[in-house]
Length: 74
Ligand SMILES: [Zn+2]
Image 1 (cartoon, rainbow, N blue to C red):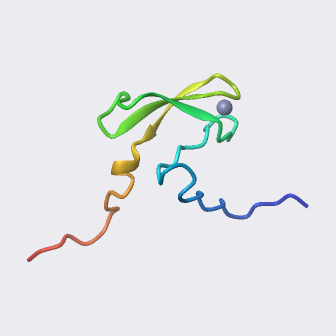
Image 2 (cartoon, rainbow, N blue to C red):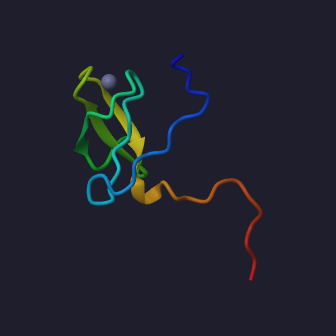
């Protein structure tokens, strides 16, 4: 009875409006920012406090990047 057909929406306004990504390994929310810049300019380096794994996540500032869609002209 613990099914989750769709991911729950990220909590907003939890910490000054800045939301931290969840660990891709254990899905834990206990993560800390290691470096604001990761391997790419749009990613930041995070460390999971639960499984002590490092991972990169897209920066929140770039999270609102436009997805694949029709080009805007004019
Ligand atoms: Zn983890």
